[in-house]
Length: 186
Image (cartoon, rainbow, N blue to C red; front, side):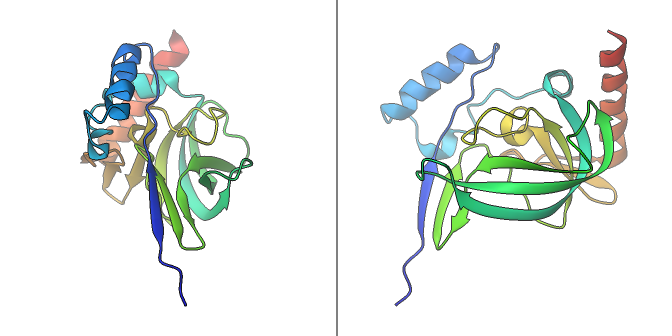
Protein backbone atom coordinates (compact mmCIF):
# COMPACT_ATOMS: atom_id res chain seq x y z
CA UNK A 1 0.00 0.00 0.00
CA UNK A 2 1.43 3.35 -1.01
CA UNK A 3 1.98 5.80 1.81
CA UNK A 4 0.16 9.10 1.19
CA UNK A 5 2.39 12.06 0.52
CA UNK A 6 2.53 14.59 3.30
CA UNK A 7 3.65 18.17 3.16
CA UNK A 8 5.21 20.18 5.95
CA UNK A 9 5.37 23.93 5.40
CA UNK A 10 7.82 25.81 7.55
CA UNK A 11 8.02 29.56 7.47
CA UNK A 12 11.41 31.04 8.13
CA UNK A 13 11.77 34.79 8.31
CA UNK A 14 15.28 36.04 7.66
CA UNK A 15 16.43 39.08 9.58
CA UNK A 16 18.09 42.01 7.83
CA UNK A 17 19.26 45.39 9.05
CA UNK A 18 16.41 47.13 7.23
CA UNK A 19 13.72 44.62 8.06
CA UNK A 20 14.79 43.21 11.43
CA UNK A 21 11.96 44.76 13.40
CA UNK A 22 9.42 43.89 10.71
CA UNK A 23 10.71 40.30 10.66
CA UNK A 24 10.42 39.98 14.43
CA UNK A 25 6.89 41.43 14.35
CA UNK A 26 5.94 39.06 11.54
CA UNK A 27 7.38 36.08 13.43
CA UNK A 28 5.31 36.95 16.50
CA UNK A 29 2.19 37.49 14.36
CA UNK A 30 2.72 34.16 12.59
CA UNK A 31 3.23 32.32 15.88
CA UNK A 32 0.04 33.87 17.29
CA UNK A 33 -1.95 32.99 14.19
CA UNK A 34 -2.55 36.62 13.25
CA UNK A 35 -1.31 35.99 9.70
CA UNK A 36 -1.64 32.88 7.60
CA UNK A 37 1.20 30.94 6.04
CA UNK A 38 0.49 32.11 2.49
CA UNK A 39 1.42 35.68 3.44
CA UNK A 40 5.00 34.89 4.52
CA UNK A 41 6.55 35.98 1.22
CA UNK A 42 4.21 38.93 0.89
CA UNK A 43 5.52 40.47 4.11
CA UNK A 44 9.23 40.22 3.27
CA UNK A 45 10.79 43.52 2.33
CA UNK A 46 11.70 43.61 -1.34
CA UNK A 47 15.41 43.63 -2.06
CA UNK A 48 16.51 46.12 -4.69
CA UNK A 49 19.05 45.14 -7.31
CA UNK A 50 21.74 47.25 -5.55
CA UNK A 51 20.90 45.32 -2.33
CA UNK A 52 21.25 41.96 -4.08
CA UNK A 53 24.62 42.92 -5.57
CA UNK A 54 25.99 44.53 -2.39
CA UNK A 55 25.05 41.59 -0.12
CA UNK A 56 26.32 38.78 -2.39
CA UNK A 57 29.48 36.83 -1.74
CA UNK A 58 29.40 35.89 -5.40
CA UNK A 59 27.11 36.37 -8.39
CA UNK A 60 27.00 33.83 -11.19
CA UNK A 61 25.13 32.65 -14.22
CA UNK A 62 24.95 28.92 -13.64
CA UNK A 63 23.21 25.82 -14.93
CA UNK A 64 21.49 23.57 -12.41
CA UNK A 65 22.80 20.07 -13.19
CA UNK A 66 21.32 18.06 -10.31
CA UNK A 67 19.16 18.23 -7.21
CA UNK A 68 19.37 15.64 -4.44
CA UNK A 69 17.01 15.69 -1.46
CA UNK A 70 18.14 14.31 1.90
CA UNK A 71 17.46 14.72 5.61
CA UNK A 72 19.53 17.25 7.53
CA UNK A 73 21.96 16.03 10.21
CA UNK A 74 19.31 16.26 12.93
CA UNK A 75 16.83 14.33 10.78
CA UNK A 76 14.05 16.87 11.30
CA UNK A 77 14.11 18.65 7.94
CA UNK A 78 14.35 17.61 4.31
CA UNK A 79 16.93 19.70 2.49
CA UNK A 80 18.02 19.66 -1.15
CA UNK A 81 21.59 19.85 -2.42
CA UNK A 82 21.64 21.73 -5.73
CA UNK A 83 24.70 21.19 -7.95
CA UNK A 84 25.40 24.12 -10.27
CA UNK A 85 27.87 24.43 -13.17
CA UNK A 86 29.18 27.97 -13.67
CA UNK A 87 28.59 29.49 -17.10
CA UNK A 88 29.88 32.95 -16.07
CA UNK A 89 30.97 34.56 -12.82
CA UNK A 90 29.89 38.19 -12.53
CA UNK A 91 31.27 38.97 -9.05
CA UNK A 92 33.37 37.26 -6.42
CA UNK A 93 34.68 33.77 -6.73
CA UNK A 94 32.34 30.84 -7.13
CA UNK A 95 33.75 27.81 -5.29
CA UNK A 96 34.92 26.06 -8.46
CA UNK A 97 33.48 25.28 -11.90
CA UNK A 98 30.82 23.21 -10.13
CA UNK A 99 29.50 23.86 -6.65
CA UNK A 100 26.68 22.74 -4.38
CA UNK A 101 24.24 25.00 -2.55
CA UNK A 102 21.91 23.50 0.04
CA UNK A 103 18.45 24.88 0.66
CA UNK A 104 15.77 23.75 3.08
CA UNK A 105 12.86 21.92 1.52
CA UNK A 106 12.39 19.07 -0.89
CA UNK A 107 10.66 15.74 -1.37
CA UNK A 108 12.01 12.47 -0.04
CA UNK A 109 10.17 9.13 0.10
CA UNK A 110 6.78 10.74 -0.49
CA UNK A 111 7.25 13.42 2.17
CA UNK A 112 7.61 17.07 1.17
CA UNK A 113 8.98 19.93 3.23
CA UNK A 114 8.68 23.51 1.97
CA UNK A 115 10.23 26.62 3.44
CA UNK A 116 8.74 30.01 2.74
CA UNK A 117 10.62 32.19 0.28
CA UNK A 118 12.87 29.43 -1.01
CA UNK A 119 13.57 29.55 -4.72
CA UNK A 120 11.86 26.75 -6.66
CA UNK A 121 14.61 25.43 -8.93
CA UNK A 122 14.45 22.95 -11.83
CA UNK A 123 17.32 20.78 -13.08
CA UNK A 124 18.38 21.67 -16.62
CA UNK A 125 17.63 25.38 -16.27
CA UNK A 126 20.01 28.36 -16.25
CA UNK A 127 19.89 30.85 -13.40
CA UNK A 128 21.35 34.19 -12.38
CA UNK A 129 22.09 33.70 -8.69
CA UNK A 130 23.11 36.14 -5.96
CA UNK A 131 24.75 33.90 -3.37
CA UNK A 132 25.48 34.31 0.32
CA UNK A 133 26.36 30.76 1.45
CA UNK A 134 27.01 29.38 4.91
CA UNK A 135 23.81 30.55 6.59
CA UNK A 136 22.61 27.07 7.51
CA UNK A 137 20.27 24.66 5.78
CA UNK A 138 17.09 26.31 7.05
CA UNK A 139 17.93 29.57 5.28
CA UNK A 140 18.18 30.20 1.57
CA UNK A 141 21.72 30.49 0.16
CA UNK A 142 20.40 33.28 -2.07
CA UNK A 143 20.38 36.92 -0.97
CA UNK A 144 16.82 37.90 -0.10
CA UNK A 145 15.62 34.30 -0.39
CA UNK A 146 13.95 33.64 -3.72
CA UNK A 147 14.53 37.29 -4.68
CA UNK A 148 18.19 36.38 -5.25
CA UNK A 149 17.52 33.85 -8.01
CA UNK A 150 16.37 34.50 -11.57
CA UNK A 151 15.43 31.86 -14.13
CA UNK A 152 17.10 32.87 -17.40
CA UNK A 153 15.59 32.17 -20.80
CA UNK A 154 16.83 33.22 -24.25
CA UNK A 155 15.32 36.71 -23.94
CA UNK A 156 13.76 36.98 -20.50
CA UNK A 157 14.49 36.51 -16.85
CA UNK A 158 12.01 35.66 -14.13
CA UNK A 159 12.67 36.43 -10.49
CA UNK A 160 11.74 33.37 -8.45
CA UNK A 161 10.16 35.22 -5.53
CA UNK A 162 6.40 35.18 -4.96
CA UNK A 163 5.58 37.79 -7.61
CA UNK A 164 7.68 35.97 -10.26
CA UNK A 165 8.51 39.30 -11.90
CA UNK A 166 9.60 38.94 -15.55
CA UNK A 167 12.23 41.31 -16.96
CA UNK A 168 14.34 41.62 -20.10
CA UNK A 169 17.38 39.34 -19.75
CA UNK A 170 19.92 41.67 -21.37
CA UNK A 171 18.71 44.70 -19.40
CA UNK A 172 18.95 42.69 -16.16
CA UNK A 173 22.48 41.45 -16.88
CA UNK A 174 23.61 44.94 -17.94
CA UNK A 175 22.24 46.40 -14.70
CA UNK A 176 24.00 43.73 -12.63
CA UNK A 177 27.31 44.27 -14.46
CA UNK A 178 27.03 48.02 -13.94
CA UNK A 179 26.35 47.61 -10.22
CA UNK A 180 29.20 45.10 -9.89
CA UNK A 181 31.51 47.62 -11.58
CA UNK A 182 30.39 50.33 -9.13
CA UNK A 183 30.86 47.94 -6.21
CA UNK A 184 34.38 47.18 -7.37
CA UNK A 185 35.20 50.88 -7.69
CA UNK A 186 33.94 51.72 -4.19
